[in-house]
Structure formats: C-alpha cells, structure tokens
Image 1: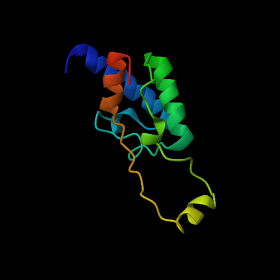
Image 2: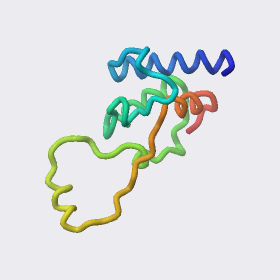
Image 3: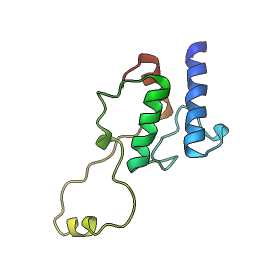
Image 4: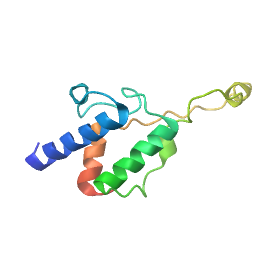
Length: 108
C-alpha cells in the first residue's frame, strides 16, 4: 500500500476509534463497521456524516438503508410485521477499506 494510503488508513482508524470508543490497535482495514463495532441505525448515519465532513467525501451515491438497519430500541412494529412475512433485506457491510477508498476518491 502506498504511503499516502497508509496515512489515510491511520487517520480513518483514529476517527473510528474515537467515534466508537475502541482502541486503535483493535481496528484494521478488514474491520466491519456494523458487525465488529456494533454501529447501526442513527449511529451509522452520524458516523458517515462525520466521516464525510472530516474526509471531504461526497455521500450522494450512498443509500444508507443498504448498510444500516433501524435504530435499536423497543417497537411493536417488527413483531406485527412478522405476522406478514416478507423478504428480508441483507445489509451490506462497510469495512475500513471501503472508507479509505471513499476518502481517496472523495466520493462513495
């Protein structure tokens, strides 16, 4: 990996470490934001908005619902919805490497 990319990776890992309160040495380019760090719902939106501002990334091509589910908490609607089953949508993972790529290109 070229020097500039390695520095970008370090900056993004530092950002994620601060946002998620996780030690930097626990993160690498294969870390998944949702599965490994537990970021979902509004927290996912906040993370990507902060990432966008800090690293000047245009998120216009991003459909947030493809990557993050609804905010956790009690709601009777999922239980009611289970009465009428429908196809579940599998969320796409976002890895640190995806954030590095977006920061390098300036767009999602």
